[in-house]
Length: 483
Image (tube, rainbow, N blue to C red; front, side, top):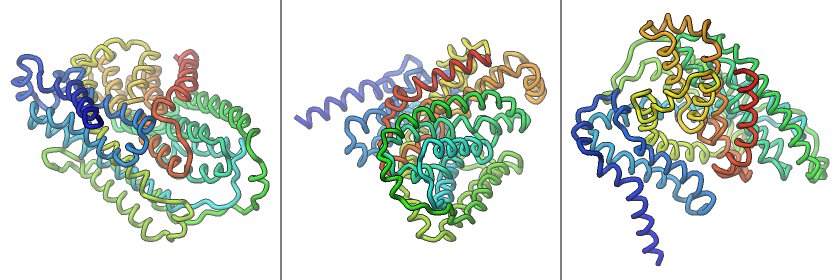
């Protein structure tokens, strides 16, 4: 019976996700064979994103209904969905498909994982000891500090630096899931809205001519969102705090706060410096298997690896043990995002094609700042927020300044159309908090928390219990106040 069930599920998956590629529309094969690299988004059908939907549903449902299977086999599930897309994609598009796959791994995935690995490794060598007991006031203060740090060292840097102290501060508590969720809301996302260092979309805007300090125009929106979330968190945490067993808190001895492994802050500064270097310096490109990668990015990646290795070599083993450091969370992220980056190719290509792609109806329907806020935000909740930002950034330039050189168009955009660019920037940054995959540190925080014994909500549980009832209300208020 078990064998028949496996065959039945295999047939369903084949019909839903593989057959559409094998039986394409008439003339598809000849068109696909001659398509250019940059034009692929205009011919890919909407259903080519089904494997991406499949991997998202796997991340959402398997931990809920088959947790043991997921724990042991999630790398295979990720590889399965990657192959479901890659094999027919390569069959029909051949060289163009190979280029697209090479491009997303060389230009996007590998630097993404190197940055996460470096920050994870370095932050794992910074051990904050002493009495930090998770009262509502202490927790709110830690979230506020993290929110402020996020625009200075990035949402990923701030998240990796503070998640372990927050976990230790709340280790004695029974009710702490909400603290991890609000940590993702504030530290991993909304706090990064003030500078290009805070979040990749803003850094991308900086590379395209938006002045470094222009994003401070988002300060009212960031402050508005952070203040409401911190207030809601304090009320919610106070409610749960009254239910806690305070004897565990009172029995513990007070210890002064100390930081072990403080030299790792030097490596953290090196990582931030490397990221800045890659965006500010132009020293040509290198051809890697037909994909052009900038020399500055390669130097940055080398520097990040060096910072991580230096941290491993110079930090005492007992410091990492005190942090309960292990490679599990970064490996989980690496495996799952390897599949996500593969299956996300058609969605990003269709988005890049603008009005000519299968997602063109989204681009064509966006007119007002409020619509830009929600369109860029909702897409950033599931897709990479950097290319989503760039898509709407480019469409805004095309709408208001058609035919104008980018530098001149951006110079006028940042003065004449402030609400539009602010809406795209805020939407791309803020709404990354809507799902676990909306921004790089979200899933990492979830993995680290789960390894520490926190029963984090499932993919859909996170959305329906927290992000939709809390964040969507906040974003509606944000729309009414600012747009």
